[in-house]
Image (cartoon, rainbow, N blue to C red):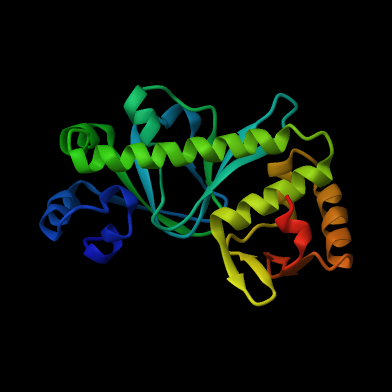
Length: 224
């Protein structure tokens, strides 16, 4: 936990010196979560800020009809919960461990006492929250489409842009997503997503291997 290498990978502490990183290490607490375990309930969002040390979590929101919609994924080194600490409001979403993971938490008291008035932290917070706002706009854009196929394509493209690696055959999305994950992101059923993925595979536009999706290098994706 006290490893400076881990702290250096966190955007929030990007500009800290080694001495400054050692100073904040005592306020960081580690928690372990198993796959499927709730990391953060909506009513708890104004108590802590969270950093994913390893593993992956997903942010989900339940609709009025009981369907769960995935709003975001957070990977190693990424933070969540900072906005609620700033405005004191809870968020209508729950964070769930997508796989076994270790999460670092910073209490509201320590956040205000140690971090909030640090100019380096404030500058990075603005960058982080601006990026998250852009990601929210993308989700809204995706959900405005009336047909599930267009929503799925839009989601895959945005995942490739945010977490994709260019390979000879196309862009591989690093985030592991299941058909159910994509259904919850697109606001449709898993059966519909499975049918659409099969169609894209038949058209040689998409490759799927162990829950990793590759957008094959085709003008179709570049035109979107």
